[in-house]
Image (cartoon, rainbow, N blue to C red; front, side, top):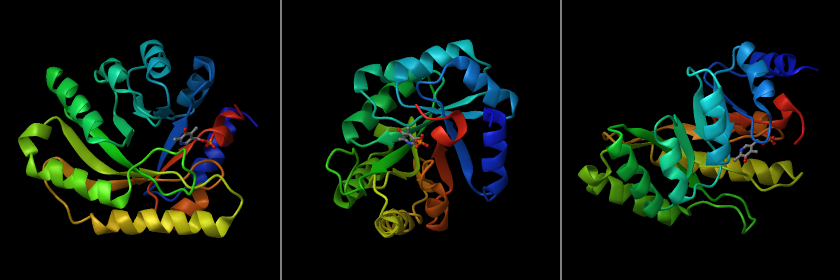
Amino acid sequence: MSIAENLSEIKSALPPHVTLVAVSKTKPVTDLMEAYNAGQRIFGENKIQEMTDKWQQMPKDIQWHMIGHVQSNKVKYMIPYVRLIHGVDSLKLLQEINRLAGKWRKKVDCLLQIHIAEEETKFGLNEEELEEMLKQVQHDQEGFENIRIVGLMGMATFTDNQKQIKREFLHLKTIFDKHSHLNTDNCHLTTLSMGMSGDYQLAIECGSNMVRIGSSIFGSR
Ligand SMILES: *Cc1c(COP(=O)(O)O)cnc(C)c1O
């Protein structure tokens, strides 16, 4: 099937409250343009350099989401255009995003990445670290004037065990709900980014409202 056909099949099955991020990492601009021409406007990349190259070459009504691990020294390249940063997992990184966003007089939307998988290798905050970060941001509003924490992101363990994946997604949903009452200028959690090609249906059942789908749209990498 073509990229356009894959997209239309996935989109027709998504509930209306779920946002689709088309994960286009490693794929050439021609593939992204095929998705663009089929109506897709939100693209996710996991490397800042690659995302910036694609941003430069492609139509400017695209919303670019940074879904990968962010290195502080590269943040500056994406600040002018990035729409949402999914993988914020330290106060230091948040401070750097805030500082650079200030230079551009912008407010940059961020998701805090939560570690829900059992693998040690995946990035993310634990619950305690999350609480601490949310506290810091709320108590130092002026220090974080140029960012908005708009939700959480997480990745389940890479396994065939559906029960385990479901448990991990529900765990993240519980954490998300616990903080959904927050409503300050820079802290208002409304987006729950969870689910990829292999597990997005389950993620939606567990409360996801943003899915990041790559290989089911663009083919394997
Ligand atoms: C690559 C990637 C995806 C998409 O994965 P697929 O299995 O190809 O859908 C989603 N989220 C993150 C963080 C990724 O790095």
